[in-house]
Length: 84
Image (cartoon, rainbow, N blue to C red; front, side, top):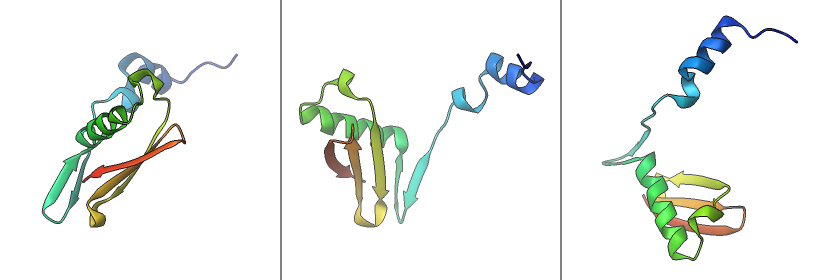
């Protein structure tokens, strides 16, 4: 069995990029939205359509700021959109 490199072991202990705190902001014209806010709006919209919180297994997000919309597909079945 091969030994892990020092960098791999250090990342596993400290977390590395995968566990680093991230803040992503999408800007377009005079508008900006944080990805956390977009995901919250998607979740609220999907739940209002009858999807239970524990039913989420996959969420695909398509941001189209020029249309002021964020489109989403949940579990390859439920489509929707929220305002950007």
